Image (cartoon, rainbow, N blue to C red):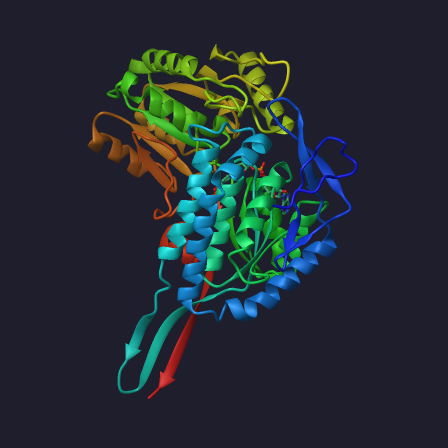
Length: 482
Ligand code: NAD
């Protein structure tokens, strides 16, 4: 493990190198990294430069020549080895992730995320690249194959940084592409270390990582040596990437912001659904693309659902990641904390009723309590904007048509959910919701074999499943005269 002490620190700081062509790349520039739970310095992140990006792209281009021609079974075996390596290093990576990202070890948090990394990587190994015979007669044999695209640039966010990195890396490499990944500046260390581990299972240059630095993301989008960008992050950044990628006509998979609606029908049982609603909204402190971010509850059971959610919220321990019983940690960074604070204050000023939370109680770290906002209305900023934090607006409705209209009113559509004791009634509402995934009596579950992505401003393309693998390929036809 490469953990040199940096002379600047005198602070026992760890750092991890960028990795290009399977070689550690030391740098002269570092940024301090702080634990969001208490502000303690936990390490030094290298700062990437354009020159390192160019080296990484050149390495990936060189490696593509052989990796793209490597027999399928060898690429499958590499994915199996990477999945095993993720499992073998899960404890170390989960701890680093917890310190850097803030999420606790237990619950649906750091250990869970590492489990997901191994699962998605293992699933990639199980997938086949289909070959279809389109014509086979006296005149011709015509076959459709899927071939790798080239160098894939992966740009990742800070909320589920390791799992999302694997969501890009696994299908890209399985299909025969090579990768340059740039992590979010907020979660550099854990990504660097994970990539360092994965490169031990791969030929030189198949996977390279460049730490964030001034303009590295935009440079990737514009880079002539990158053939496709796989991006996960905000809708605004997705649009910027699309614009920057236009001159080189890059292929794009963009997984962007969400503002998922949930509709609770009048026949739902408030006690039975409270826990599902709570974790649908507050998994990873609400910092999840497909978390429940607007809850529409029928007037008949509005108060009962609010009471059940308040009771659930009071039982959940929020605390530093290293405390065994913490199930929720701090907000990851000051920028996101400001968004959450602003939305809560605005909701209060607009006349909403804050049932629980609504103001910071901790004096250190980026903690913000679970905040349930009752009597929210469709014109409030906490309903219209993605909060991406521990805050949930609860909107009262009496006409299900109106709830569906409000749920569909925004441009984002990753997922939605319907909550009811009557599955036929729930399905009828589900049919009318515009969303990539509509859940019934749950929210936010993702799995390697189920395609995931929205259709409007939340996504361009899908990830996961066979469709996600094929998104890392071009179609190639062999048309052979007989
Ligand atoms: P962000 O858009 O600020 O940053 C994401 C990544 O893009 C980072 O690595 C960042 O450095 C990079 N970046 C920033 N500007 C860039 C530019 N102009 N060109 C290229 N790269 C650039 O997002 P974030 O704050 O890290 O993540 C939160 C957002 O991500 C939320 O909106 C959330 O909904 C979304 N998200 C979506 C999914 C999904 O699957 N749809 C999953 C997780 C998060």
